[in-house]
Structure formats: C-alpha cells, structure tokens
Length: 106
Image (cartoon, rainbow, N blue to C red; front, side, top):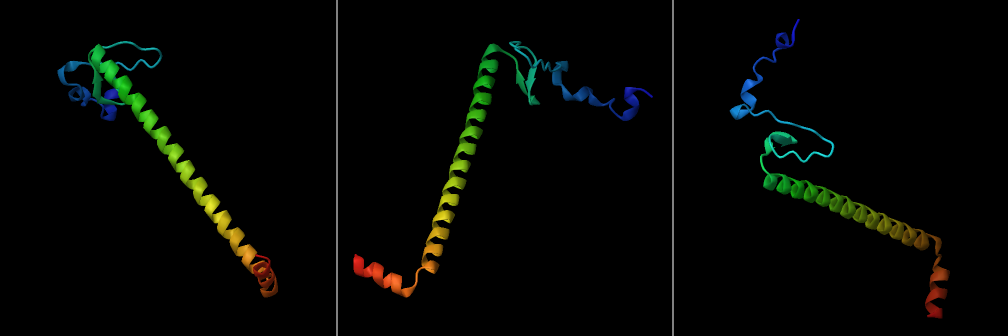
C-alpha cells in the first residue's frame, strides 16, 4: 500500500510551471520559490521578500492593536457595570430620612 493508493497521485497541477514551494522556517533569507501561508503567496525576488515581511509585520501590528482596543472596551464596560451596581446599592440603602438629611446639608 503506497502513497499513491490514498488518492494523492493528482497533485501535479498545484504548482504552475513546476516550481515547488520551499518552506524553511528558521532564519530563512531564501528568495526563490518560497511560499508564505498558501501556495499563491510566493516569494520570487528580494523585493517580494521585503514586501512580504512588511505585510506580515503589519498584520501582526493590526491584530495586537485590535486586541488592545477590545481589552480597553471590555474594561470600560466592566467599570460602567461596577458604577451602576454601586449607584443601585447606594439608592437602595438610603431611607427617605437620610435623603432629606443629605439635602439639608447641601
């Protein structure tokens, strides 16, 4: 039972022109036939390597900024909920006499 018996024999059409993607991960400065994420994102020159580095860095920066904004938003909602709970607990703990006393002292 070989590799071809599992239905993998028809993969010759994935790489137009016969160029095979190289995916060396550690400290790779190779600029010929390197694929990033998918086969269609291919590095063919130094310029495309530089452009790919800028795109990957920008995507990382974007997602980190998005995480920061989401955490700030969640924190502000949490503070609003705490403030509302505090107001509700203060209103329920005060009697009409304490409200009158507070108004007279102002």
